[in-house]
Image 1: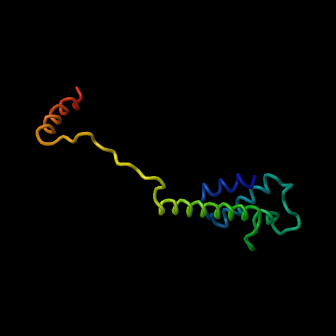
Image 2: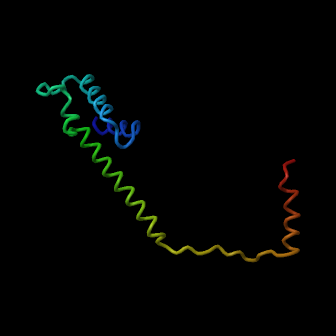
Image 3: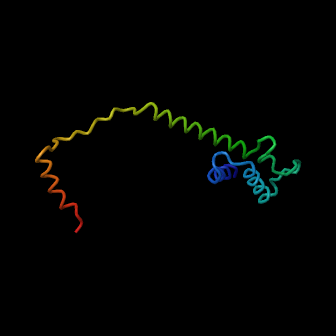
Length: 116
């Protein structure tokens, strides 16, 4: 459930959702599932997200998602900086048309490109 909620939170509100959004999600959890409410805490949702300490199940999952996305960005940047791993061969044209041959080929192509 926490994974699904954090995925939705990140998709809707970005990689670092504001505190009020995190509290809103935790209130939703405890209102939909009242047995998950912590009776020993002030608001009942602190084990999902505690705004004072920034801890809880949602906060831990958000940190993991942020860490993994930062690593993905580093991996993609390093791939682009290193360049291609295999050599690419240039495509070779058998014969390049020049001069009159080129003009003749262009005149043949012009009428065929018009839509009738």
